[in-house]
Amino acid sequence: AGAGAEGVSRGAKKAASYPALYLELGKAKLSGLVTFTAAAGFVVASPAGVPPDLAVLACTTAGTMLSAMGASAYNQAFEVNNDRRMKRTARRPVVTGALSRPHALAAASASSLAGVGLLYVAVNPLTAGLAAANVVLYAGIYTPLKQVTFWNTWVGAVVG
Image 1 (cartoon, rainbow, N blue to C red):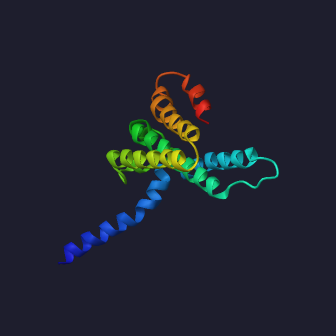
Image 2: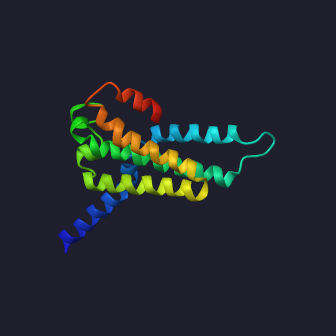
Image 3: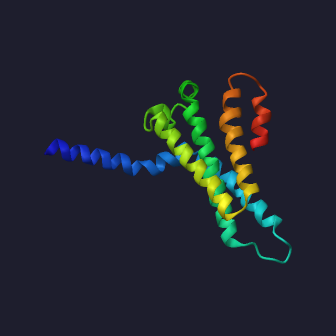
């Protein structure tokens, strides 16, 4: 019975660490900066003299954060071998084994789909389309190009 209880305890500890691992996987600080700029743009683009719609602002912020974190999570899932070789990235959750690559891909998909879906339903299709395009550009084009050509910098500039 002792070994079973110990296994449950380790499982509970790992489950409790998932929120922190997901924040790291999604590069929460960087994604937060992206989200801040989107929120600032939303407020600045609001008609003069009309307060911004706070419910739509909240959905824009949440959808942008989820989409950005999903793109970053895809990047980490795809870049394990390269991240392992660099001191700056060697402690990322997929590299260390804290999250498996399939787990990271599932989290990336869930976050990206939730973010784009929220933007589509609660904000507008254009904003959702731009978020989806950014996920594809960052994860599907910028990330693989990093190992091939300097042109990845230009793709990264579009995403940024």
